[in-house]
Amino acid sequence: MKMKKYLAPSMKDGLELMRKELGDDAIILSTRTVKSSEGDIVEIVATNEEPSAYSLPERLESQGGVPEKEETAPTRKRNSSPKRNELKKRELQQVTQSTDVGDTVNLVQLRREIAEMRSTLDGLRDAIRYRHSATLGKLYNDLYKKLRNAELSEDESLRYIGLLAARGPFPSIEEALRTLRMLVTEHLRVIPPLEPKSHCTTALFVGTTGSGKTITIAKLAAVCKLLFKANVLIISSDTYKVGGTDQLQTFASIAGIPFEVAYNSQELRQIVKQEKSKRDIILIDTVGRSQRDKKMLLELSAYREAALPDITYLVQSATVNEHTFLDVMDKFSILSPDALILTKIDEAVSLGALIGILRKQTLPLAYFTTGQSIPDDIEPADVERIGTHIIPEL
Ligand SMILES: Nc1nc2c(ncn2[C@@H]2O[C@H](COP(=O)(O)OP(=O)(O)OP(=O)(O)O)[C@@H](O)[C@H]2O)c(=O)[nH]1
Ligand SMILES: [Mg+2]
Image: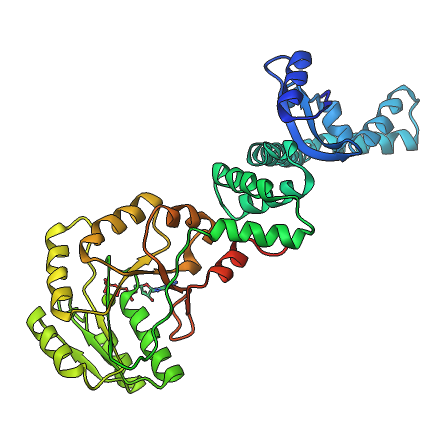
């Protein structure tokens, strides 16, 4: 297979060169960006022959099969002798083993072709993923790749690099990194974590089924009790599903945290009214509701009106797709949430991918949860930490 290498200042130019010479059927075997004294250039290795055009001798040669063939061929011209007989025997052995050898050859060949295809695909993926790299200088190029690696979309990454370039030049890479982190996170708003105040703080937790409300309440109750020595009360109003209150009740009894169950909104109103003067923090769990069920959401809002919380947290999993995420934010807005708790960050593809989604909603972030461990896997939202998480050091 004949391969040709093309060097050009950009992928577009390289592809044009390649097509001019090899035609439209050219097969790209690899692409990469190489450094030169005049800056980055794109290298494309291509062919216009199908990989199946490998001839058998070529295959054997490449697998070290040729020497044996060369050794056996001249023996046919020689006279009979012990050496000749020996060689004949070897030839015969080779024939009887030919099926095995053929299989091995095919397997090795197949493996090699798969490896070639993989490297071609990797090259194409990189060529697509970093197709703007060739036009950027080294610093912006490195930072652009960092954003793409953090799963920010191409448009998003280019936009941030454009914004960054407008603020340059930078005295150091660290300074450029700091500015980029600031740009990527500047639309994020956060609110301070729960802590005891001079008056009782009542917090209501709402969200879709399984979003992580109950376990988040357990984590926060433990943090508030252990860290702030706060007088915490947990109220569960999740009497809808079988065993809805059991999980929290068990946790509360182990952790020595007072626990109440409210079977309807009136009861919830009553309990909150009675307990408010005695507690620093009241955490209220609710039943999970689908954002698509308007009737159930209205029912939830009756609980909200009864509890009159100081803060309503919308607990949302980071693992759902953008469409669902924004739909939840939209539909749950009838409950007037004040802040967002983003759960299951540990299961999400990446925080970078969430940045674009978070920009499209308006709630401030309160907490991230990063696992199932109580109370360790929760942290207050912190813009600087989010920035470093998305764009680590170079
Ligand atoms: N990996 C991971 N799992 C989590 C996290 N938060 C919650 N979970 C798990 O998600 C599942 C649902 O959590 P729950 O706290 O019961 O969710 P919920 O919102 O109370 O669910 P419903 O009451 O059914 O609406 C449980 O298995 C939790 O352990 C997290 O941050 N990371
Ligand atoms: Mg629950």
